[in-house]
Image 1 (cartoon, rainbow, N blue to C red):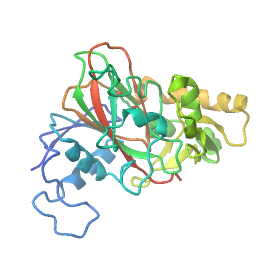
Image 2 (image 1 turned 30 degrees about the vertical axis):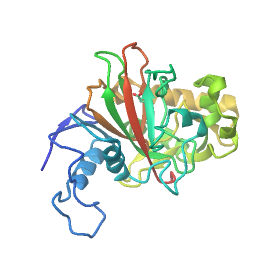
Image 3 (image 1 turned 90 degrees about the vertical axis):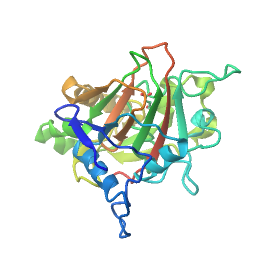
Length: 300
Ligand code: SIN
């Protein structure tokens, strides 16, 4: 089996067709075991993803939950896997009851009128789980039911944005650290009654470099986001805003963006180490998606 690759923009994203993620994708690229029938298909797919800036759209998939989780684990252990940390408790009501590794993103309700998923998940610029010491690496979102129009997701290329800054500004940013805190999202993006107070116990607050170096590509990216970054370490709130807001404005210029229009059966894999994303809540039709989130490395 092989697959076809089509670039989605000149700077970010690749569309993958002609592959079945439920099939044998071969051994882990780092494994020394016999490659088996799938050869190194996953290694080729992952390389295509890294080459495309950490953004790939895999079309026409039909996956069981176990297949979705197994594919996602190729990118790293998942939040809620045995022995791995959970996501923040506030989202616990949206996790699949039998598979807590699966976070449900949906505006649908069950027979009792209870939400099936979080309808307003990610309706702000953010990088998944950046408030943890080991934040998300890859997120793998499976679009099971999508509106005919609306409900797009936008991705911002933080590697390209960093590269486009002047050497002088890069030198200033390179030495800075930022505080990421779930409380920022809780105060501004979540209805207050939804928030589970235990999420403020310190586990959801971390300090990371403003510019991080990707563990696999070696490329530098901006690593701050309006959703979860509270302030720059050792700077006042006012001073932080004066630096961070222009950075956000710069990184979300059209030339750094890819806007994904969903088709049902899409599996979109994005790399939170070098991208921000924003889910547009502009639809009323049913939308049902399931996300697995791989735990990445500590940013350096
Ligand atoms: C998310 O942030 O994972 C949600 C993305 C989306 O609903 O498009």
